[in-house]
Image (cartoon, rainbow, N blue to C red):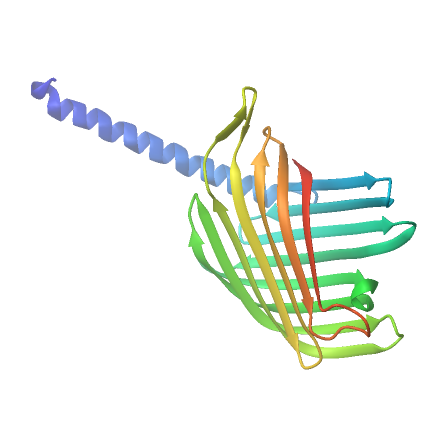
Length: 263
């Protein structure tokens, strides 16, 4: 609209872009400094998940599902903690009792390459073991990293100790393979006048192979965002163990609906 002032306008635009770039640079420096000065209990974020049911009549069933995830992201290091508990009773008899706790540090070695460590504890006597411990370390790579989807894979050696319900103990070297996938399907989906949802689907896969027992854990789900912090989740989980105790099924599946609070 002002061709005679094109040079002056361009100079103003160049100066504005330089100011914006400098402001972004200073903000990044400030954020890195805040991370360096943060204490051990700072910078943690996470989510808590709870689900429960009670039924009476021809059968009396109660169930409770709890999960907690914590994450701390630094400049090069990321620390992740997670714990889950599933418990169910049917007609006065415990029919499911599974616990898991895991800690996974990750060191970013490049834009997409990272090193990981893993320490994990499990207990599931219905799968034939009172306790199972696993430690692993290796490398991973981020294949996709965008605003709508992320995909990373990892692999490394592992060492696993299994304490079976029959009193025996098995120590094995193993190999671990993992994948983590998240996909944002849509920005916003309105269900009612005062509630909207963001639908996301994600999946995790963890495969541990040793000469005695191969285990596979697959978890996928869809999240519906109710508010800034509250979400509901529909998930499906598959657990496979190739070597289980007598009269035990090798594959367990679990579908559930839970509420999640982020913090």
